[in-house]
Length: 210
Image (cartoon, rainbow, N blue to C red; front, top):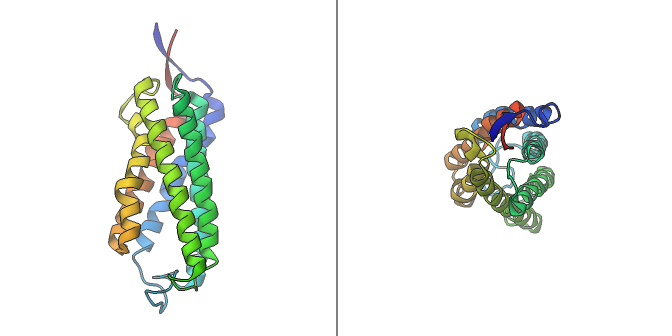
C-alpha cells in the first residue's frame, strides 16, 4: 500500500532550507555578473570586476555551493533515489562536485589579478571543469533514479536531474563562450532550480510503499 509520510523531516528541513537559500543568494550574483566594476581589461581573470569585488563574490559562491550540497544531502537522507545504488552514488558524486566547486571558487578569488592565459588561471579553470563534470554527471544519474523511483512526487521531482542537464547544455557552453549575458542567464537558471529543490527537501514528504 502506498502512503505519504514525513520520514526524517525534522533532520532534513535545515538542509532543504539551506539549498533554497542558495538560490536566493545566487540570483543577485547572476545580475551582478554583467555589471562592470572597476577599470578591468577583458584579459584579466576577474573581468568584469575589480579584484577586491571578485574575491568577495568568490567567498559568497563558496557559501552558495556548500548550501547547494546540503540540499543533495537532504535528498539522500529522505531516500528519494529509492533502492537505486547508482542513484545514491550519483547524488554523493554531486555533493563531492559541489564541494570541489567551492574549493575552485576560493582559489579563483585569490588569482583575480592574473591573466586568463596564466598558468594559475589554467589550473583553476581545469579544476572548475573537472568538478563541474563530476557534479553534472552525478546529478543526472541521481536525478534519473529519483524520477524512476517515484518516491518524490510532483513536478519538482525533476529538479535534481535538471541541475545536471543545465550544467551540460547551458552553464558549460556559457563559460566557454565568454559571453557575459549568456553566463548571466545560465547562472540564474541553474541557481533558481535549487529553490524548489530545497523547498521540497525541507517539506520532507516522500511516498512509501508498505
